[in-house]
Amino acid sequence: MKIALIGATGFIGSRLLAELATRGHAVTAIVRNPEKVPMRAGVIAKKGDVFDKEGLAILLAGHDAVISAVHFSDSDPAALLGAVRQSGVKRYLVVGGAGSLEVAPGIRLFDTPDFPAAYLDEARKGGAFLDLLKQESGLDWSFLSPSAVIAPGERTGSFRLGADQLLVDTAGKSTVSAEDYAIALVDELEKPAHIRQRFTVGY
Image (tube, rainbow, N blue to C red):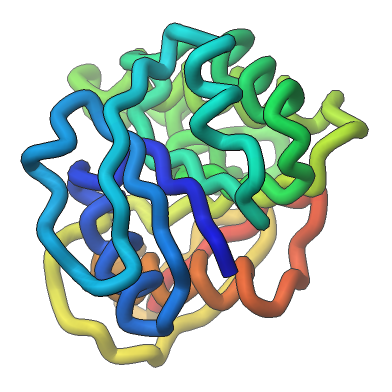
């Protein structure tokens, strides 16, 4: 497929770029600094601004799907969603956060007293973005939340998927590698199973 990847040089975006390229997809890597995009077969780097709705829509047009891997606090939801709508691309996958996942009925992770203050603003903005998506009827969107801890690690291909509840292992830990997160998102791209849904991945 022909994929537009916004934020292709970030922590998650770079893993997604590698996973997409490995699987043979043609990727337009949309970033602020195209020179930072690694040279790979099938990858084209384009300079783009997530706050420029008109310009971004032009870059996105003609792709089979758009993947957004930008921080919620570093983008404008209205401009981003507006650009995707305007581009005419229907399939939209979003790298989400763990903060809006439920740890108990009606209680999200970012509502808990131990949630790190440094991540609270980003987490809340991610939750607000998800709420916006839930009102979106024109796009075939999917929002993938990681586990509470996502870090560089192994590409194992062995993980669990969930819905709106935080996944924890038998020791009570909630973790996933960035590499396995990328597998889960590209799997969803290739074989859609969560259209207009949020889902999560973890061990």
